[in-house]
Image (cartoon, rainbow, N blue to C red):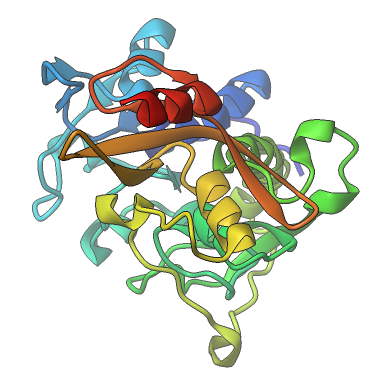
Length: 294
């Protein structure tokens, strides 16, 4: 069944992952009427007030955008007759009184095979736990985190992908790109059938649920003497944020060294590129030679 009128969609999202999904909606002529994103925030060393990627995209496409500080009260722009909300990496809990507004509820793309890896860090956690089979879920949001019924899922076995850069374990940024593409396809294939009532959702099995935690900045610290494979998983999982780093002593001072790239082969972890505190990116061996010389 095909809708005779353009669906009335509100999109909630903030990050680059959200933008990838918006691009899929654009390609299939399912652009939202309104976009809700987070407020502009300070960014970088100089703390420049910067709009989120979704706002930049929305302005380029000429789509009205709101940036409420809070959703405790319903913004006037949402007090309308909407078909569906689409929520992708919005970054805030959406209360029930908002979820209840659209006729067909609020759909969410979650980058795991729910009920596995409910929570805020499913991509990073899949890598950290060496979970070679994972995937993407299209679900209906309810009041609990990643708990709502499932509309569709797509499994991904990273080791079976042909692209060399997606060999296991991939960087989180690479896995995010893959999941954004798959999630965009899941959404566009199922959005109109869902609005038309042609899809039946299926409740999650709570007994099989697993959970992942919020990643903190200090989680990025690595002990280079620890298990090399676990360290490599961490380097790959945290390539975007918070990054991975270790500390060394130089002339009596503790120096923070950020890891930019590394390799794992035959049971050995080899750090290849680093950014020492206060310095530019360099080859790790050059950094080590400089340490010995000092």
